Structures are given as structure tokens and as C-alpha cells.
Image 1 (cartoon, one colour):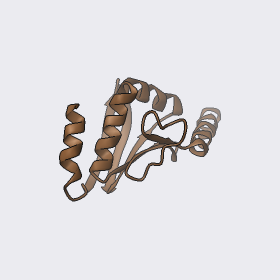
Image 2 (tube, one colour):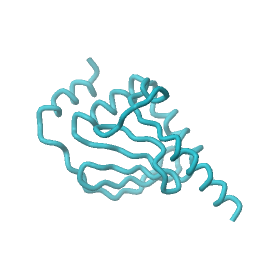
Image 3 (spheres, helix red, strand yellow):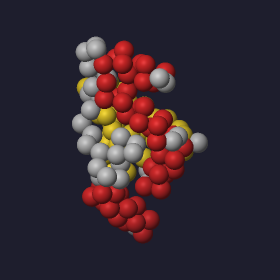
Length: 125
């Protein structure tokens, strides 16, 4: 078992984690915002391309699945947003479909389209 899986097993028997956060962080020198209230985390990324780049940098499907297992065990749901649109969800309230099942992540096609359109609007305004 991985250390993350062991931690998820330990966390699963405890009360759900509650989060209060407002962080500005950088991944590969590019900013993103992480906020949380209660059992919800929001990771706000500046562009859809940047979100894809971060996802690729997280690791393989097993590493991502371990993180989503940990979030679920802790009672947390994480939403990844681009231009205010949720493009992916992981954790307790995620329902992975065909595309996201390998990673344990719910991909939100409507949010992806909205994020791409939002990016195009921002680029041309």
C-alpha cells in the first residue's frame, strides 16, 4: 500500500475534515488560487491549458487516484475551476464518468466548454 492509501485508511474512520483556506500558490512559477470552506475546496486556475498542464504534472493515474481517495476519506470535495467554471471535481461528491474513471475524477464537459469560451473572450477583449 502507498503512504497516501495508508493515510486515507486512517482518515476514513474519523470525522470529516473541515477546511478554511484562502491561498495564493504557484505551480511551476504560475499562480493559482486555492480556497476552502467547510468540506469544499476550490482550485482556481487562470486558463484551461494551464489546468491541463498542472494535471499532467501531478503524476500518473495511480497517484491522482490516491489523492482523490484521500480527499474522499477525509470527506472533502475539490473543484477545479477555470474562468469561474468547474472543469473537474474530485473527492466525496465526485461521480467520475467514462473519461475520468481512470483517475477517479469527474470531468465536467459543460464547464470545459465554458472555460474555453471564457478564455477566448478574455483573449479578444
